[in-house]
Length: 323
Image 1 (cartoon, rainbow, N blue to C red):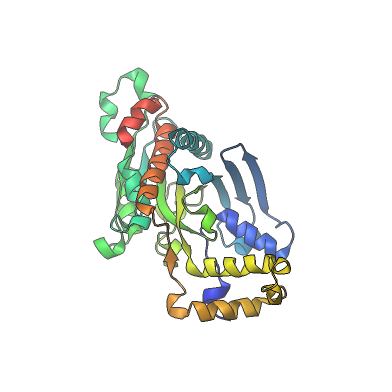
Image 2 (cartoon, rainbow, N blue to C red):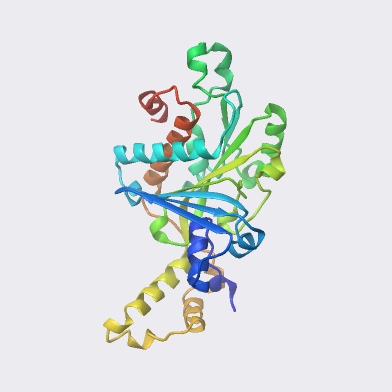
């Protein structure tokens, strides 16, 4: 069977769990789920605890925290601040470091391609303080962590693997933690630019577009790595399959769709193959307002990191750095 229509790619552990549960129709041993929500956001914590669950999910053992808020697609400063607060709280709980530890922020992606520019744009908004530690007063220094940031570019620009660049930096400055920011791919168009995922397992640059490279993980760098990502694209095959599935769900109510009610998996795959031939199977789709959306969500991600790293800097001051 053609892999372009049978494999739905997603970087979100939440979606991987949803798809697996739908297929096996039961809870997955070794996968723990915890959910909390309010009127603006849903926070889901997925913890993968066993090698078998890791194999079934296609995700490394560890903790994945997803913050979903459909309102992030719109210009809403109070909501953005609220999501920053959620992100900061979850990041602090995931990274229990001594106050004197240095944190390296890595903005992954290609700054010349807007849907892939989340990492560099967020890194640009990080409040960097490593060079100021000797100048801070004692009362301020306790709440302003040593933070440095870099956007290493991509292999096609630099001729170097991102992992090689970060390995060299880590070996030199010896941070206590690396936070990698990257654009992701979702299996649902509803989660594009509305979802932030934190992962304790690190990241593989390029995985969202099926191009796995040198991983930024604790195993490869020798220090803990937290990945923060936002879906900025969805695969065209996913949209095509979603359309067919929606038609099937409503087949009983539409006289012209009744023949689709019993459509088999093989039939759905055949239809998508005809609409999206192999050469278009990896086509990526992003919102037309992606320029504004990336700028807004980059500010949210950077703001959450800044609040987590620098609790003694109030939001008003951070806000000035972000704009």
